[in-house]
Image (cartoon, rainbow, N blue to C red; front, side):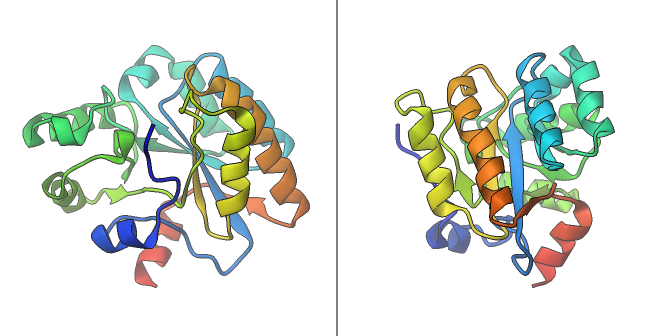
Length: 215
């Protein structure tokens, strides 16, 4: 499986209006989780985050919020931030612009957020412009953990996170069945190791996005 493990300079140059990394002046790391909420895995993630007093951003699929509203409410209640991840997990490269935008708007009825992450990291420049015109902030990543990749094990997933994470990094994990085996190996090590190194874990919030955009 081929994918970019980091939001490298080439990607940032190609899509400069998307957020790839946060302000790195302080020792802060920004964990994010895609594709939930999940009735079993998301609560496990929340329990682990609570142990480390860590906050995170959850980019939620609208249909999952509709099906598991109590899990969604829990993550908000515990001080985490939600973002829009479309209603049906659409690939923007394979979806017409009007259909894609309608799907984002459908999700917005369940997820009240102007933070948006495209599923698979794929959306066209025109789709991006349409969303930004509606005041969405498109959040990408510095580190793609690879927890969704069934060809690697948890140790390789953790090695990727450990090697590429810096202050200000946005890390992508997935609170999903597909990623669970690798997530349960890599996430505890991420929290423990970087906490011991003096980092704290913050959610991506609108004020921090605005600060990053001004830099």
